[in-house]
Structure formats: structure tokens, C-alpha cells
Length: 155
Length: 443
Image 1 (cartoon, chains in turn purple, orange):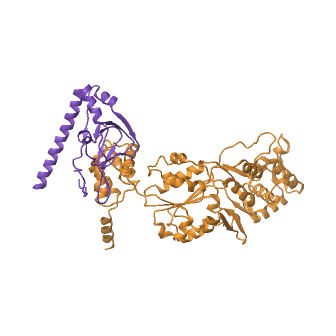
Image 2: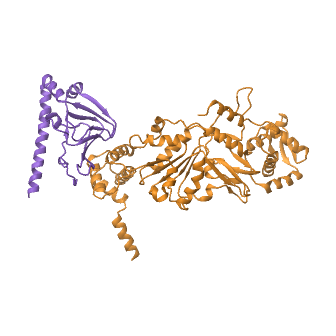
Image 3: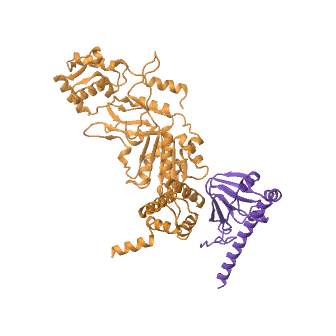
């Protein structure tokens, strides 16, 4: 995708994680995490906000929106669908949000904070471990993709 | 909503005249109407007179009694209910009198109401602002995806019933918004309107079945009270929508040289409701001419209409005038005029967030699953790369084309970047190709 914008991340490799929970895994997380409903076009968080967890989309669509710092023009760079999550970096490292995420339609999400993950580590270590593995695998895939991009660019 | 005093005053205006003495128009005008109806239909029963003229049978019987004595009408049949079941026809002298009545005008229909009464009734029914709430607007506009709080820009102007200027690029719902306002006004408290007016012996036909939607109501009042004058009907608040076809004569009293009565101008038919001038600037007359026509009514809330005899009549101008245009307002009117239209609302194209919301809603409505890669491709390739402005109407049109393409090929409706490319290719006019084609055509 040709974005023609100076974005704080690579929009061609959006951080996109699909979750496939088994058994009562989802119910366990659901019981611990906060369910949030948002009206279409309202922001879940904004670019630059402090990170406080990741969000799992239960219903509706979320738009990942990047703002060009110079022109202030907003661009939709990704769409998160039910079963996918966003804001995972906020679960792992405390750095400002790289993009704005807005409700594309009326949206229902589950907010998974570091505290929720810590509780899972205590009570359901196997589930917490599965989540870490999934995040690690996605991160690795991202790194490989970006490495490939770099090699292509060098050629 | 009218106050109790206004309701009382209106009730007095609408009292049914049950005798000639109570009639507020010249009895000769009613006799003329009866003569023309008899000439036109041959035998006419008292009930039929009452239905057509919308006057009380006892009043009409009183007149017919007189006409019988003057040997202008004769009884053709008598039913078992006494005079109330009589039918009449014209005598030879009556036919001569009917000829004179036709010379004056050929109008056959409800007896008219004096214009002074009409003016009073309009003032009584439009004295207070409409009481439409923010929630009413939200519900009326719920089928449209609009910027947050959009209804707050419209509400005060609509309730005040003055004027509103909707402007902005095409394809973003100006007309649909205006139509939603029209439905809202139409569905608010109904109003009493006469079918026809009379001034200086002339008749003005006001009723227009395309504009005036009747509401069923109980004609009889509680015991002891007089009935409602049937020359008045209860209608939804009228809504007149005029587009590019609007011409200046439609805003003046139009005298039919053959029928010899007047047709009310559009703004008179819209009184108490809304007059939408859609596609403003695309009318045959210059925008300034059309605007000049409204300056005095907008300022004074009074309109002056001229009869062909030179007489001028004053009519209250109590309606919401909505101008809708996709032309630059400053190209259409100077600032002085635009100041007179206090509320000007820009209906702009959607941003990417709103466009997605519309796209998602339309996917559901059209019955085609949303595909996010297709959407991102559409944004990048057909809007960002080309600089094409997004319009709210695009998602619906493109998705319908895409679905039709799937159906034509006998495959399940779906979206893909390739399919949206095909839909866009046939939907958007490529200015480069169009220029090339025009050039080729000329050569």
C-alpha cells in the first residue's frame, strides 16, 4: 500500500493478532476483563496516549488510524475485525500508542490490562502462557516481515 | 402547540354555518356554485351539493328553497326523508342563470373561505414555534449517517419556521436531510386549511392533493356544540418540494383564462409547513431573481399577491423555506441576503471514519459481506491516489454495482479489490478519458 505519509510504523505490516480460544478460555478472560461498548466514530484511544492494555474485538469493526504529524491528515491504515485484537504492545511495553483506534461501527471490546494478565498467570498459567506465545509469534512474524522489507529496500 | 385561547379562537373560526345568515361569503357565490354543479351533472341531490360544496345541508336547503320559489330549480325526485332527500335539476330560467355563473368562473368545488379568515387561521396555527425536540430529529435522521450533533444545527431553525440554507458538495444527503425535515414537519401537529379562498369576488384554489395530506378526524363535536365548517380540512403540515423546474410564475397567483379562477402559488400552498427549493441555482431564472422574490416575505413574514384586477392581497408568510444547493452560496447570493437566512448548514463529504461507517451499513443493507482489504484498497486507489472527494452516496452505489456484477456472473455476492475496481471503473467518470472522448468526438 502506498501511504505517502510519514507514519510512526509500517502500515503494510499492521500489528494484527487473531485469537482462537478453546474450551472455557474465553469465558475465563471475559470474567476478568472489562467489556466496553463504544459508539461508531468514537476513539478507543488516541495516537500518543499512554498504553494501558490490549483490546479484543467482540463485535463490530475498529479502525486503526494514523495521523500525519505534519499535515494532521488522518489515514485509515488497518481494520480490526471480531476475534482480533489491537493495542497488544500496551500489554507488553509501556510506550505511547503508535496510532489512534476508533470504532468503525458500534463496537464492543474486551480490555485486557497487565493486571488481568498477571491474574491469569496466577490462576490460569497455561492460558497466560498461550497468550504470551501468540503475542511472541506475532511479533516474530512482524520482525521477519520487516526484515524482508529492509532487504528488499537495500536491493 | 396552540394555547387554549388560540384553540378557542380557532374553534370560533371553524364553526359550521348552518343558515344563510351565518354565511361569511356572498350567497350569490354559493348560488353560482350550485348552478354550475346542476348544469354539469343534471340531477343533483342535496347530499351531493353538500359533499361537493362542503356546506351544511340545511343551509343549502334554505338556498334551494329560494331557488325553487324563483323557478330556477325543480325537484326531480323526493325520497322518504322529506326535503333532505330531494334531488333537483335546472329549469330553463335556471339554465340561463347557470350560463351567467359559468361566465364568471367555471370553478366547481368546495365553497371558498374569505381570505381574512384564512389569514387569521394561519396566524393562530403558526404563532408559536414547533415543539420538535432533539430526540425527534435524531429519530427522523436515524437512517442517515451524519456528523455527531448534526441535528442541533437544524433544530432551532426548523422549530422557528423561518429559513435554512443547506449547502455542500453533491451526493452527501442534502435532499434526503430536507426530506426528513419535511416528514418531521408533516408529522407534527396538523393544521386546519381551507380548500379554496375568496377575495374581491375571485376564487383561489388552494387545495392540492399532492401537497395537502388529509387527516381523519371526528366531524361532530360533543353535544351542544356546533359542527366544524367542512370548508376546512385537517391536514398534515404541507410540504412543497420544487427543483430545477421551478419557474417564477409558480410563485404568483396564476389565473386560468378558460376556467377563470386562480391557482394558489406554491408558497401559499406551503403556508404553515415547509417549502424546499432543491437544487437552488439550477432554476430557469437567475438565483438573484428567485432570492429577491423572498426578501420581503422573509423580512416581514408577509407575502403580497396581486390579482389580475390590480388588487393586492396580503397573506401571512409562515413557513420554513429551505434552500438546498451544491453551488457555492457566495456565488449565488451576496452576504446581505445570506444574512437574512440565519441558519446555513454545510453538509460536507464524509471523512474516512464516516465513510467506513456508511460502507459497513450499506454492506449490511445491500447484502454483501464486508471485506476489509477491499475497503482499504478502495480508499487508497480510488480516493487518496486520485484526490477524488468521498461522497456519502458512493458506498451504496458501488456496493449495488458490485452485487449486480456478482449476480450477473452467477456467483455469491462478495467483495474483492478486483471487483471494486470494476465497479468503480463503471461508476466514476474518468476526467482524462472524458476529455479524450470529447476531443475525439469533435475531430
